[in-house]
Every structure is written in C-alpha cells, then in structure tokens.
Amino acid sequence: MIKHTITFKLKYAKGSAEESIFLKAATELRSIPGVKNFECLRQISAKSHFDYALSMDFISIETYNEYNQHPEHTTFVNTYWTAFVEDFLELDYELMQ
Image 1: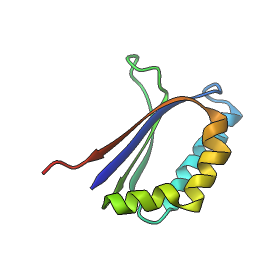
Image 2: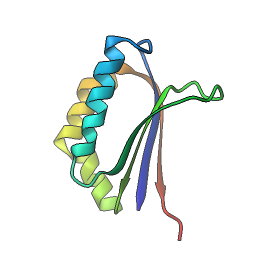
Image 3: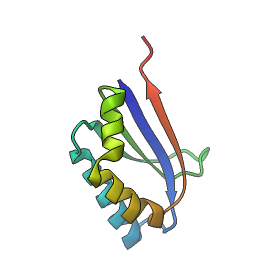
C-alpha cells in the first residue's frame, strides 16, 4: 500500500473565496480511479506553517503512478495547484511489513 500525503499553504486567506474554490476542486480528486481513503484536512498545530493536507491511499505503486498521470489529476495540478499553492511538502509512504 502507498499512502500519499501532501501538506500545503495557500496563497489566499483562510475563509476566502479562493480557499473554497481550491478545496472544492481538491476534494474532486477522490473520484479518480484507484484513490482510497481520501481525506482533506485542516492543520491545527502551531508547530507547522502549513494550513491543510490531502491524504489518500493506493493499493500499489502502479496505481499511484496511474493517479499521477490521470487527466483529472494533471488538470487539477495545472489549473489549481500551481496558481493557488504558496508552499508544500509531499510525502509518500509504503506500508512496512
């Protein structure tokens, strides 16, 4: 299993129309085939400057790679991610057995 996590800070203020637009678009990623356990999360710790996170699981590295190349994902990245995100950290984990 692959756990894909990405924590980020938007260029726009919390509560703004832009925040709402971005988060709505981000939640639509859950409909891409292979995405499991999708979560859109809000950061509550003062220990991080990031405000949000997305987390999802994939059954294999192949499924994860298919997601990365899926047209809906690439459209989201090109339309929303590059325009709305100020900073991010992406972490991808493999389940240890």
